[in-house]
Length: 213
Image 1 (cartoon, rainbow, N blue to C red):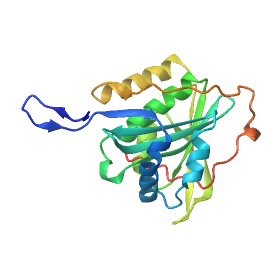
Image 2: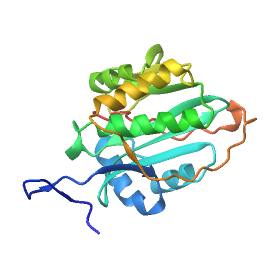
Image 3: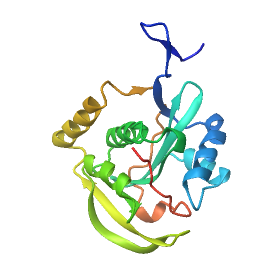
């Protein structure tokens, strides 16, 4: 069944954007976006290894059958770390990054996150503006973190994300989108609550963190 909607004027409108759990069938499209948006793209094997781990959350945004964005997060105790987020360059500017990050953060909070961190290129003003709307603030930098070109990363944090105040912030972001974010039911895998930071491996090269909201 086609996801295209028909407007009151009889014209086909754009497919509804849906955020859902990343599955193996999505990975060809995920890799295509990754190759176009990252100077150090992840491999198929890395995505497969990450997506199956219980202490990870990996999501895709799709319009009809087309994947147009994705994001991932790992846990260390009650802290979440956004490991990757990207939007198809042909669909940037449509607030897809905002939608998928909104779902990612809510899912992390539902699984017990109280603080969330991420890295972003120091020159990436568009991504930084989006993260500020989500309450992320600079907490440091990592010199030479990115390659091709070499550039420092800003380390951003959002704290007390499990609070009612932060929940209100997320509700406000969703309201500004002009309608609720459509989410497909996602299976949850129980993660180990006593896992330490040392138990959580790094995930290879840093991603560009360039969702272009």
